[in-house]
Image (cartoon, rainbow, N blue to C red; front, side, top):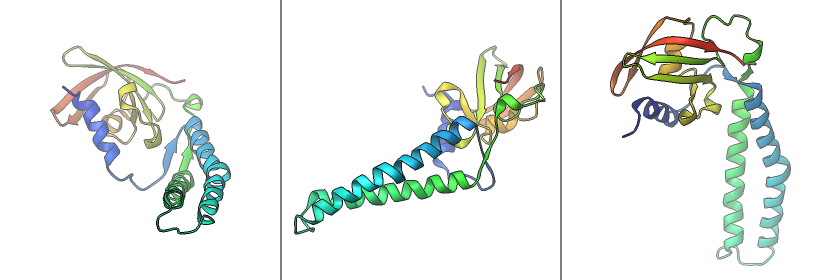
Length: 175
């Protein structure tokens, strides 16, 4: 059976990303910037060259290399536009620079215990860094939003598909 908390995070990924600043860690910013740079400077010119060679072969309507190349160019351009939008709205926050460490803020790793005694560990990250199975959840997700601003020993109620779950915060850590 799928964990309802992980399912909720997966459902959140399917929704359009909300407007407003796009908080991310320096590592995520570097990764997205490098991907965009790779697409613009390496991948796209390579595919443009391949398409030009395929076009020189003649009949484009039955030329699989040409058709696939044009499709790949559209995918690259679409991804570059997406990355441009994410990076334009990016607000880079280094969790290691957080001065107030007694509360949950972006980048915190939280250990919480459910009513049944099960302990969970979550790190609050931006939408571009979510890995629910690894415990990296969005600060905008229902769990992340419920944790923000809370301190150790505070109760947190989270609405999940399986109903409301309560957690007690045991630890707050920052890098």
